[in-house]
Length: 320
Image (cartoon, rainbow, N blue to C red):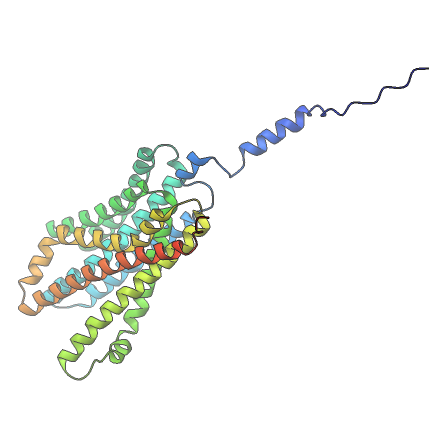
């Protein structure tokens, strides 16, 4: 009598339907390979939120400048107010253009860096054209206004071209810049109290010295905040990036401010020259404001980069 043969342990044949379903599920998975990570895929970059906040910031900045100009009666006051408001508008347009470039590049710029940059620059240019169009519709189409509108439109294009950066780094830089801008509004509201604590008295000299201390202190706080926000953003949405990415994201707010200052001095040269010719006080005011913006941008850039590098350096493991 023959014994029955024992069934051999062999792997079961895969079900064709289940295999096909698993392939479709893998194709729809949000996890991509390393090439796609370079294009900004993987964890969400919150590009829609950053774009919305950037556009709202631009609209609020332009509305605030318009309200200040509308409240001025003398032509000299209008020129001075316009010259002092232009850097903030250019910086806000750079921010909104970069947000537009980030959002467009994340959705339509997959592939090479050239394509991503082109898509981002086109989106930023659209944002800049809308802002420039608003300026022309509000203030007319004169030569001086046209030059200022071109400067604002160019700021949107330059901001969109920042999509050439790795998208997680750009997103972290935008988040840090928004935090710096928002903190700047709060700091300006508290400026009288802060300068009083820093030694501002009844004399003009003490007020100038206290304001200089305030500018340096505020710039260091902005840089510290920019570096921390950039670090926290990249730790969550770009965990595979190395320390140069954190350094670039931390310095982004300062670089954006430096770019805005350069565009302001080039595109607004005629306006700044007219205001400087009004009086010696106006010339001194413009010179002081320009120097303060330049110093603040440099401190924010360096402090932000160093803070982000120190933060990520403390998380690195020592080699065995």
